[in-house]
Amino acid sequence: MKKILIIGGSGFIGNALYKELNSYFDTYATYRTDNPAFEKNQKFFQYDMELEDISILLDNLRPTYIISAIRGNFNAQLDAHQRIIHWIKTHQSKLIFISSANVFDAFSNYPSYEYDKTLSDSVYGRFKIKIENALMRLPTHKYVIARVPMVFGSNAPRIQEIKTLHELHAPIEIFPNVILNATSISKFTQQIHYIINRSKKGIFHLGSTDLYYHFDLIKEICDTLELQDPIFKQVYDSNNDRYLAVLPKDNKLPKNLQITTQEVITSVVIQ
Image (cartoon, rainbow, N blue to C red):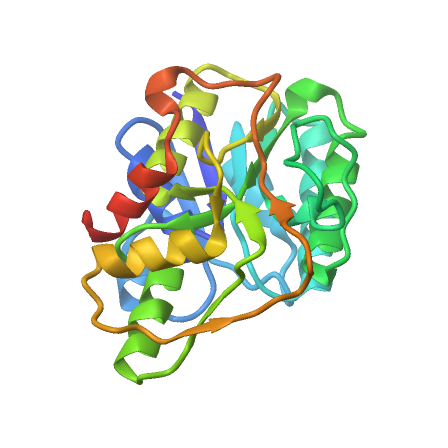
């Protein structure tokens, strides 16, 4: 049986991946802050990337798949990923790196595909690019780069933020000129499950197959959540339409693993 270690298993994405994969694979995960629920689960290991060397856990566990869903200090993340990459070079192991559409945020005139050149104007995007570039120096069978756009779901942090702002009668920021795609947490975890099951490799773009304006997406999500009279703050960071979307061209998944934006919107009320 494949042994999987999810780095960042206590976060929104990492924990959803653990719940999806645990019944099918020998799955383990890390968490950082004290939490009785994780402490009692013998398949969760406490790990602080700013203080500890991930190589020790890798040596003890020897996972065949490492999924990086960790968040936090960028320098500490870079160091942890360098150690993971060094470890998988000499072991029968593969890294699945959860990346972001932001690796293309310097390009605004068109959507981005798997093997397009990356270029970012943001600190976050440039940080993701550094790890991607380090991975792409490895043989392709050693890694999967999973680029994802915004991730939604009934318990997603973005949905909780929208609900909180609405309750406080505070404005919800929307970007009328930004064209993007999105995904749901349930579809994303299914896609990663498929990638592991079929031993896929390379770069995958795991967003919805169609594109939406950010304003329309957030407005329809508010309608679906039945939020009464939400206040929107329109933010214009450009005079022209700007794309921030990742679409698949070379590595398309089967139709049952693809998702539309309408399905993403519906996911915000499905537990």
